[in-house]
Length: 425
Image (cartoon, rainbow, N blue to C red; front, side):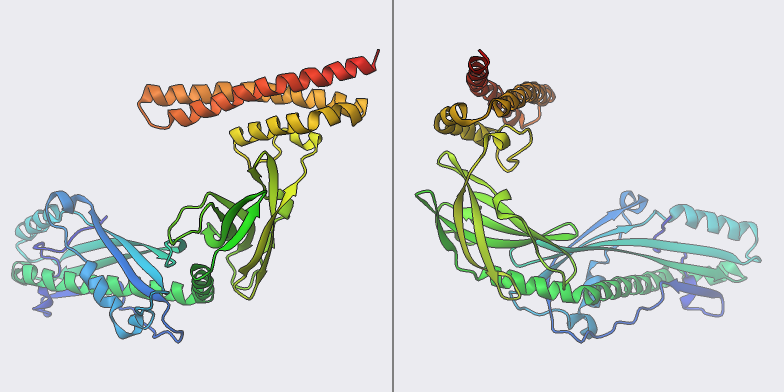
Protein backbone atom coordinates (compact mmCIF):
# COMPACT_ATOMS: atom_id res chain seq x y z
CA UNK A 1 0.00 0.00 0.00
CA UNK A 2 1.26 3.47 -0.79
CA UNK A 3 0.49 6.86 0.65
CA UNK A 4 1.62 10.29 -0.42
CA UNK A 5 3.10 12.71 2.04
CA UNK A 6 1.29 15.99 1.49
CA UNK A 7 -0.63 17.79 4.20
CA UNK A 8 -1.04 14.61 6.25
CA UNK A 9 1.12 15.32 9.15
CA UNK A 10 3.52 12.90 7.67
CA UNK A 11 6.70 13.58 9.49
CA UNK A 12 5.67 16.67 10.95
CA UNK A 13 8.22 17.57 12.89
CA UNK A 14 11.32 17.45 11.14
CA UNK A 15 11.17 21.02 12.35
CA UNK A 16 10.73 20.01 15.99
CA UNK A 17 12.97 17.04 16.47
CA UNK A 18 12.27 17.00 20.17
CA UNK A 19 8.64 16.15 19.49
CA UNK A 20 8.88 13.34 16.93
CA UNK A 21 11.17 10.76 15.36
CA UNK A 22 11.15 10.30 11.56
CA UNK A 23 12.78 7.52 9.54
CA UNK A 24 13.25 7.81 5.76
CA UNK A 25 13.70 4.92 3.33
CA UNK A 26 15.34 3.79 1.13
CA UNK A 27 18.86 4.28 2.36
CA UNK A 28 20.92 6.87 0.52
CA UNK A 29 22.50 5.03 -2.44
CA UNK A 30 26.13 5.69 -3.23
CA UNK A 31 26.97 6.16 -6.92
CA UNK A 32 30.30 4.80 -8.11
CA UNK A 33 31.96 6.50 -11.06
CA UNK A 34 32.41 3.98 -13.91
CA UNK A 35 35.84 3.30 -15.34
CA UNK A 36 34.64 2.53 -18.89
CA UNK A 37 34.17 5.15 -21.62
CA UNK A 38 30.69 6.64 -22.12
CA UNK A 39 28.39 4.33 -24.05
CA UNK A 40 24.91 5.87 -23.59
CA UNK A 41 22.82 8.80 -24.73
CA UNK A 42 19.75 9.85 -22.78
CA UNK A 43 16.58 9.36 -24.76
CA UNK A 44 12.93 9.59 -23.75
CA UNK A 45 11.87 9.69 -20.09
CA UNK A 46 8.15 8.97 -19.69
CA UNK A 47 6.24 9.34 -16.42
CA UNK A 48 2.80 8.12 -15.36
CA UNK A 49 0.92 7.76 -12.08
CA UNK A 50 -1.28 5.11 -10.51
CA UNK A 51 -3.17 4.83 -7.23
CA UNK A 52 -5.98 6.75 -5.56
CA UNK A 53 -3.88 9.90 -5.25
CA UNK A 54 -4.51 10.44 -8.99
CA UNK A 55 -8.28 10.89 -8.56
CA UNK A 56 -7.60 13.08 -5.48
CA UNK A 57 -5.28 15.27 -7.55
CA UNK A 58 -2.32 14.74 -5.21
CA UNK A 59 0.18 13.06 -7.53
CA UNK A 60 3.63 14.63 -7.52
CA UNK A 61 6.23 14.27 -10.26
CA UNK A 62 9.56 12.55 -9.64
CA UNK A 63 10.80 12.88 -13.22
CA UNK A 64 12.96 15.96 -12.68
CA UNK A 65 14.39 14.46 -9.49
CA UNK A 66 15.40 11.38 -11.47
CA UNK A 67 16.97 13.51 -14.21
CA UNK A 68 18.94 15.38 -11.54
CA UNK A 69 20.24 12.07 -10.20
CA UNK A 70 21.30 11.04 -13.72
CA UNK A 71 23.13 14.36 -14.03
CA UNK A 72 25.34 13.61 -11.03
CA UNK A 73 28.99 13.31 -12.13
CA UNK A 74 29.19 9.59 -11.37
CA UNK A 75 26.14 8.69 -13.49
CA UNK A 76 26.84 11.30 -16.15
CA UNK A 77 30.16 9.57 -16.89
CA UNK A 78 28.21 6.86 -18.74
CA UNK A 79 26.70 9.40 -21.15
CA UNK A 80 27.99 11.47 -24.04
CA UNK A 81 26.63 13.08 -27.21
CA UNK A 82 28.34 10.55 -29.49
CA UNK A 83 25.66 9.73 -32.14
CA UNK A 84 26.94 6.15 -32.21
CA UNK A 85 26.11 5.62 -28.53
CA UNK A 86 23.23 3.43 -27.42
CA UNK A 87 20.10 5.31 -26.30
CA UNK A 88 18.75 4.88 -22.76
CA UNK A 89 14.96 5.27 -22.51
CA UNK A 90 13.05 5.25 -19.20
CA UNK A 91 9.38 4.59 -18.50
CA UNK A 92 8.61 5.38 -14.85
CA UNK A 93 5.38 4.68 -12.97
CA UNK A 94 4.85 6.24 -9.53
CA UNK A 95 2.15 4.72 -7.35
CA UNK A 96 0.47 6.45 -4.41
CA UNK A 97 -2.75 6.71 -2.40
CA UNK A 98 -4.86 9.58 -1.19
CA UNK A 99 -3.69 10.26 2.37
CA UNK A 100 -6.80 12.09 3.63
CA UNK A 101 -8.24 8.97 5.33
CA UNK A 102 -5.08 8.53 7.36
CA UNK A 103 -5.07 12.24 8.22
CA UNK A 104 -8.60 12.08 9.60
CA UNK A 105 -7.79 8.89 11.47
CA UNK A 106 -4.69 10.24 13.21
CA UNK A 107 -6.45 13.53 14.05
CA UNK A 108 -9.30 11.58 15.62
CA UNK A 109 -6.90 9.54 17.70
CA UNK A 110 -5.15 12.69 18.82
CA UNK A 111 -8.47 14.13 20.10
CA UNK A 112 -9.56 10.91 21.78
CA UNK A 113 -6.24 10.46 23.60
CA UNK A 114 -6.03 14.16 24.55
CA UNK A 115 -2.59 14.14 22.97
CA UNK A 116 -1.17 11.98 25.74
CA UNK A 117 -0.41 8.80 23.76
CA UNK A 118 2.30 8.57 21.07
CA UNK A 119 0.93 8.19 17.51
CA UNK A 120 2.51 6.82 14.34
CA UNK A 121 2.30 7.87 10.71
CA UNK A 122 3.40 5.86 7.66
CA UNK A 123 3.93 7.30 4.18
CA UNK A 124 4.95 5.12 1.22
CA UNK A 125 5.58 5.49 -2.52
CA UNK A 126 6.40 2.78 -5.06
CA UNK A 127 8.43 3.62 -8.14
CA UNK A 128 8.79 1.21 -11.07
CA UNK A 129 11.22 2.03 -13.84
CA UNK A 130 11.35 0.11 -17.12
CA UNK A 131 14.63 0.66 -18.93
CA UNK A 132 15.23 0.00 -22.62
CA UNK A 133 18.53 0.51 -24.42
CA UNK A 134 18.40 0.89 -28.18
CA UNK A 135 21.02 0.98 -30.91
CA UNK A 136 21.26 4.01 -33.23
CA UNK A 137 19.06 2.21 -35.77
CA UNK A 138 16.37 1.66 -33.12
CA UNK A 139 16.90 -2.01 -32.23
CA UNK A 140 16.31 -2.86 -28.58
CA UNK A 141 19.54 -4.34 -27.26
CA UNK A 142 18.74 -4.54 -23.54
CA UNK A 143 15.78 -4.27 -21.19
CA UNK A 144 15.87 -3.88 -17.41
CA UNK A 145 13.23 -3.30 -14.77
CA UNK A 146 13.95 -1.80 -11.39
CA UNK A 147 11.64 -1.10 -8.47
CA UNK A 148 12.10 0.90 -5.29
CA UNK A 149 9.85 1.74 -2.37
CA UNK A 150 10.23 5.05 -0.56
CA UNK A 151 8.69 5.49 2.88
CA UNK A 152 8.63 7.67 5.94
CA UNK A 153 7.69 6.47 9.43
CA UNK A 154 7.03 9.10 12.08
CA UNK A 155 6.54 8.68 15.79
CA UNK A 156 4.66 11.68 17.25
CA UNK A 157 5.45 12.08 20.95
CA UNK A 158 3.10 13.71 23.51
CA UNK A 159 1.69 16.21 23.53
CA UNK A 160 0.79 15.11 19.99
CA UNK A 161 -1.50 18.08 19.42
CA UNK A 162 1.61 20.26 19.55
CA UNK A 163 4.09 18.03 17.72
CA UNK A 164 1.73 17.62 14.76
CA UNK A 165 1.63 21.34 14.07
CA UNK A 166 4.68 21.08 11.84
CA UNK A 167 3.00 18.38 9.71
CA UNK A 168 2.36 20.32 6.49
CA UNK A 169 5.83 21.87 6.29
CA UNK A 170 7.55 18.71 7.50
CA UNK A 171 5.59 16.68 4.95
CA UNK A 172 6.88 18.75 2.03
CA UNK A 173 10.44 18.45 3.30
CA UNK A 174 10.09 14.73 3.84
CA UNK A 175 8.63 13.87 0.43
CA UNK A 176 11.42 15.80 -1.27
CA UNK A 177 13.99 13.77 0.65
CA UNK A 178 12.21 10.47 -0.08
CA UNK A 179 12.04 11.25 -3.80
CA UNK A 180 15.75 12.06 -3.92
CA UNK A 181 16.53 8.76 -2.19
CA UNK A 182 14.28 6.80 -4.57
CA UNK A 183 15.80 8.47 -7.62
CA UNK A 184 19.34 7.75 -6.41
CA UNK A 185 18.41 4.13 -5.79
CA UNK A 186 17.01 3.72 -9.31
CA UNK A 187 20.04 5.38 -10.91
CA UNK A 188 22.43 3.26 -8.84
CA UNK A 189 20.64 0.10 -10.01
CA UNK A 190 20.71 1.20 -13.66
CA UNK A 191 24.44 1.99 -13.39
CA UNK A 192 25.10 -1.41 -11.84
CA UNK A 193 23.24 -3.23 -14.61
CA UNK A 194 24.89 -1.24 -17.39
CA UNK A 195 28.33 -1.80 -15.85
CA UNK A 196 27.67 -5.55 -15.62
CA UNK A 197 26.35 -5.64 -19.18
CA UNK A 198 29.02 -3.26 -20.53
CA UNK A 199 31.11 -5.80 -22.53
CA UNK A 200 28.05 -6.95 -24.46
CA UNK A 201 26.74 -3.41 -24.96
CA UNK A 202 30.12 -2.26 -26.22
CA UNK A 203 30.23 -5.14 -28.69
CA UNK A 204 26.73 -4.29 -29.88
CA UNK A 205 27.71 -0.66 -30.35
CA UNK A 206 30.68 -1.69 -32.45
CA UNK A 207 28.69 -4.20 -34.51
CA UNK A 208 25.87 -1.77 -35.16
CA UNK A 209 28.33 0.96 -36.08
CA UNK A 210 29.97 -1.34 -38.64
CA UNK A 211 26.58 -2.45 -39.98
CA UNK A 212 25.32 1.13 -40.21
CA UNK A 213 28.38 2.14 -42.21
CA UNK A 214 28.38 -0.84 -44.55
CA UNK A 215 28.30 -0.55 -48.31
CA UNK A 216 25.53 -2.65 -49.90
CA UNK A 217 26.78 -5.64 -51.89
CA UNK A 218 25.37 -6.23 -55.37
CA UNK A 219 24.20 -9.77 -56.21
CA UNK A 220 22.36 -11.48 -59.02
CA UNK A 221 19.63 -14.06 -58.55
CA UNK A 222 19.03 -15.77 -61.85
CA UNK A 223 19.35 -12.81 -64.18
CA UNK A 224 17.88 -10.19 -61.81
CA UNK A 225 20.11 -7.79 -59.84
CA UNK A 226 19.59 -7.24 -56.11
CA UNK A 227 21.40 -5.54 -53.21
CA UNK A 228 22.30 -7.14 -49.89
CA UNK A 229 23.16 -5.61 -46.52
CA UNK A 230 23.51 -7.42 -43.20
CA UNK A 231 21.75 -6.71 -39.95
CA UNK A 232 22.55 -7.82 -36.39
CA UNK A 233 19.62 -7.54 -33.99
CA UNK A 234 18.47 -8.72 -30.57
CA UNK A 235 15.84 -11.46 -30.35
CA UNK A 236 15.13 -12.12 -26.68
CA UNK A 237 18.23 -13.61 -25.05
CA UNK A 238 19.83 -14.27 -28.44
CA UNK A 239 21.28 -12.27 -31.31
CA UNK A 240 20.36 -12.80 -34.94
CA UNK A 241 22.43 -12.20 -38.08
CA UNK A 242 20.30 -11.59 -41.16
CA UNK A 243 20.93 -10.86 -44.82
CA UNK A 244 18.51 -8.18 -46.02
CA UNK A 245 17.61 -8.43 -49.70
CA UNK A 246 16.67 -5.24 -51.58
CA UNK A 247 15.49 -4.78 -55.15
CA UNK A 248 17.20 -1.39 -55.47
CA UNK A 249 20.18 0.12 -53.68
CA UNK A 250 18.96 0.61 -50.07
CA UNK A 251 18.98 3.90 -48.22
CA UNK A 252 18.97 4.22 -44.39
CA UNK A 253 15.60 3.07 -43.10
CA UNK A 254 14.60 1.29 -46.34
CA UNK A 255 12.53 -1.84 -45.65
CA UNK A 256 14.02 -5.01 -47.19
CA UNK A 257 12.24 -7.17 -49.73
CA UNK A 258 13.25 -10.24 -47.71
CA UNK A 259 15.19 -10.78 -44.50
CA UNK A 260 17.09 -14.08 -44.41
CA UNK A 261 18.16 -15.36 -41.00
CA UNK A 262 21.57 -16.98 -41.43
CA UNK A 263 23.01 -17.12 -37.90
CA UNK A 264 22.30 -16.84 -34.19
CA UNK A 265 24.39 -16.50 -31.05
CA UNK A 266 23.82 -16.19 -27.33
CA UNK A 267 23.93 -12.88 -25.51
CA UNK A 268 27.35 -13.64 -24.05
CA UNK A 269 29.98 -11.27 -25.36
CA UNK A 270 32.50 -14.01 -26.17
CA UNK A 271 30.05 -16.47 -27.76
CA UNK A 272 30.48 -17.50 -31.39
CA UNK A 273 27.93 -17.28 -34.17
CA UNK A 274 26.10 -20.49 -35.03
CA UNK A 275 25.67 -20.33 -38.78
CA UNK A 276 22.82 -22.09 -40.57
CA UNK A 277 23.40 -24.60 -43.34
CA UNK A 278 23.30 -22.31 -46.42
CA UNK A 279 20.90 -24.56 -48.36
CA UNK A 280 18.35 -24.25 -45.55
CA UNK A 281 18.09 -20.50 -46.27
CA UNK A 282 15.94 -20.28 -49.38
CA UNK A 283 14.63 -17.60 -51.72
CA UNK A 284 12.06 -18.23 -54.47
CA UNK A 285 12.69 -16.28 -57.67
CA UNK A 286 12.03 -16.90 -61.36
CA UNK A 287 10.34 -20.22 -60.68
CA UNK A 288 13.36 -21.66 -58.85
CA UNK A 289 14.88 -21.86 -55.39
CA UNK A 290 18.14 -20.09 -54.50
CA UNK A 291 20.34 -20.07 -51.44
CA UNK A 292 23.04 -17.63 -50.24
CA UNK A 293 26.72 -18.44 -49.87
CA UNK A 294 28.22 -15.76 -47.64
CA UNK A 295 31.52 -14.89 -46.01
CA UNK A 296 32.16 -12.62 -43.02
CA UNK A 297 35.36 -11.10 -41.68
CA UNK A 298 36.71 -9.28 -38.64
CA UNK A 299 35.61 -9.37 -35.00
CA UNK A 300 32.35 -7.59 -35.90
CA UNK A 301 31.56 -10.29 -38.51
CA UNK A 302 31.21 -7.74 -41.30
CA UNK A 303 29.61 -9.20 -44.42
CA UNK A 304 32.51 -9.47 -46.87
CA UNK A 305 30.94 -11.39 -49.78
CA UNK A 306 27.69 -13.06 -50.78
CA UNK A 307 26.28 -14.81 -53.83
CA UNK A 308 23.12 -16.78 -54.55
CA UNK A 309 23.23 -20.25 -56.04
CA UNK A 310 20.42 -22.33 -57.48
CA UNK A 311 19.11 -25.04 -55.19
CA UNK A 312 17.73 -28.29 -56.55
CA UNK A 313 14.38 -29.47 -55.16
CA UNK A 314 13.94 -33.27 -55.29
CA UNK A 315 10.36 -34.48 -55.58
CA UNK A 316 10.65 -36.26 -52.25
CA UNK A 317 11.45 -32.96 -50.53
CA UNK A 318 8.88 -30.95 -52.48
CA UNK A 319 6.08 -33.29 -51.47
CA UNK A 320 7.23 -33.61 -47.86
CA UNK A 321 4.72 -31.87 -45.53
CA UNK A 322 6.34 -28.99 -43.70
CA UNK A 323 9.41 -28.78 -45.94
CA UNK A 324 10.63 -25.52 -47.44
CA UNK A 325 9.26 -23.57 -44.47
CA UNK A 326 10.82 -20.32 -45.61
CA UNK A 327 8.28 -19.94 -48.43
CA UNK A 328 4.88 -18.32 -48.25
CA UNK A 329 1.82 -20.33 -49.27
CA UNK A 330 1.62 -18.58 -52.65
CA UNK A 331 5.37 -18.97 -53.30
CA UNK A 332 5.12 -22.69 -52.60
CA UNK A 333 2.28 -22.91 -55.12
CA UNK A 334 4.34 -21.05 -57.74
CA UNK A 335 7.30 -23.35 -57.11
CA UNK A 336 5.06 -26.38 -57.50
CA UNK A 337 3.71 -25.12 -60.83
CA UNK A 338 7.23 -24.42 -62.10
CA UNK A 339 8.43 -27.84 -60.95
CA UNK A 340 5.45 -29.58 -62.61
CA UNK A 341 6.13 -27.93 -65.95
CA UNK A 342 9.87 -28.56 -65.75
CA UNK A 343 10.39 -31.84 -63.87
CA UNK A 344 7.25 -33.98 -63.85
CA UNK A 345 7.84 -35.70 -67.21
CA UNK A 346 11.38 -36.72 -66.20
CA UNK A 347 10.09 -37.98 -62.83
CA UNK A 348 7.48 -40.19 -64.51
CA UNK A 349 10.11 -41.58 -66.86
CA UNK A 350 13.03 -42.13 -64.49
CA UNK A 351 11.68 -42.70 -60.95
CA UNK A 352 11.20 -46.22 -59.62
CA UNK A 353 7.72 -47.60 -59.09
CA UNK A 354 8.35 -47.66 -55.32
CA UNK A 355 9.30 -43.97 -55.35
CA UNK A 356 6.24 -43.05 -57.43
CA UNK A 357 3.98 -44.98 -55.05
CA UNK A 358 5.56 -43.11 -52.15
CA UNK A 359 4.90 -39.80 -53.89
CA UNK A 360 1.22 -40.74 -54.28
CA UNK A 361 0.95 -41.13 -50.52
CA UNK A 362 2.82 -37.85 -49.93
CA UNK A 363 0.62 -35.87 -52.32
CA UNK A 364 -2.60 -37.29 -50.86
CA UNK A 365 -1.41 -36.10 -47.43
CA UNK A 366 -0.65 -32.68 -48.88
CA UNK A 367 -4.14 -32.45 -50.35
CA UNK A 368 -5.72 -33.31 -47.00
CA UNK A 369 -3.56 -30.78 -45.17
CA UNK A 370 -4.26 -28.06 -47.75
CA UNK A 371 -7.99 -28.66 -47.39
CA UNK A 372 -7.76 -28.41 -43.59
CA UNK A 373 -5.71 -25.23 -43.77
CA UNK A 374 -8.09 -23.64 -46.28
CA UNK A 375 -11.05 -24.26 -43.96
CA UNK A 376 -9.11 -22.98 -40.95
CA UNK A 377 -8.13 -19.77 -42.72
CA UNK A 378 -11.74 -19.24 -43.86
CA UNK A 379 -12.94 -19.60 -40.27
CA UNK A 380 -10.35 -17.11 -39.02
CA UNK A 381 -11.40 -14.62 -41.69
CA UNK A 382 -15.08 -14.99 -40.73
CA UNK A 383 -14.29 -14.51 -37.03
CA UNK A 384 -12.47 -11.26 -37.73
CA UNK A 385 -15.27 -10.01 -39.96
CA UNK A 386 -17.89 -10.85 -37.31
CA UNK A 387 -15.84 -9.07 -34.64
CA UNK A 388 -15.30 -6.04 -36.86
CA UNK A 389 -11.53 -6.44 -36.63
CA UNK A 390 -8.94 -5.94 -39.41
CA UNK A 391 -6.89 -8.72 -40.96
CA UNK A 392 -9.64 -10.86 -42.49
CA UNK A 393 -8.29 -10.36 -46.02
CA UNK A 394 -4.94 -11.90 -45.11
CA UNK A 395 -6.67 -15.07 -43.91
CA UNK A 396 -8.96 -15.08 -46.94
CA UNK A 397 -5.94 -14.80 -49.23
CA UNK A 398 -4.25 -17.71 -47.44
CA UNK A 399 -7.44 -19.77 -47.80
CA UNK A 400 -7.44 -19.11 -51.54
CA UNK A 401 -3.79 -20.14 -51.76
CA UNK A 402 -4.46 -23.48 -50.05
CA UNK A 403 -7.49 -24.11 -52.25
CA UNK A 404 -5.38 -23.35 -55.34
CA UNK A 405 -2.73 -25.78 -54.08
CA UNK A 406 -5.26 -28.62 -54.19
CA UNK A 407 -6.05 -27.83 -57.82
CA UNK A 408 -2.33 -27.78 -58.68
CA UNK A 409 -1.72 -31.12 -56.96
CA UNK A 410 -4.66 -32.93 -58.60
CA UNK A 411 -3.14 -33.33 -62.08
CA UNK A 412 0.26 -34.21 -60.60
CA UNK A 413 -1.36 -36.92 -58.47
CA UNK A 414 -3.40 -38.20 -61.43
CA UNK A 415 -0.31 -38.41 -63.68
CA UNK A 416 1.73 -40.34 -61.10
CA UNK A 417 -1.16 -42.74 -60.35
CA UNK A 418 -1.61 -43.37 -64.10
CA UNK A 419 2.11 -44.14 -64.53
CA UNK A 420 2.06 -46.56 -61.61
CA UNK A 421 -1.04 -48.27 -63.04
CA UNK A 422 0.59 -48.60 -66.49
CA UNK A 423 3.68 -50.21 -64.97
CA UNK A 424 1.59 -52.75 -63.14
CA UNK A 425 -0.21 -54.00 -66.25
